[in-house]
Image (cartoon, rainbow, N blue to C red; front, side, top):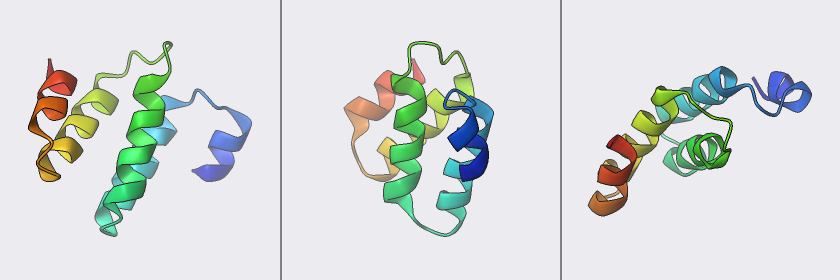
Length: 71
C-alpha cells in the first residue's frame, strides 16, 4: 500500500487498507495517523476514512473527537 500511496497521494482506498492493516497489528498510532491523513484532505469523500478514524478516537477514549468523525 505504501508504494501505491507514493504514486497516488490521494488514493483514499489504499489509505484505508493501510490503516486497517495497522489496526490488525495493533499499531493504533499509525492507524490513526493514516486515517487522519485521509480525512484532512479536502478531496476525501470516503466515509470509511471518517468512520475508522472515529472508531480510533473512541478506542483512545477521545469521545468528542470520535463523535465528530461519526457525524
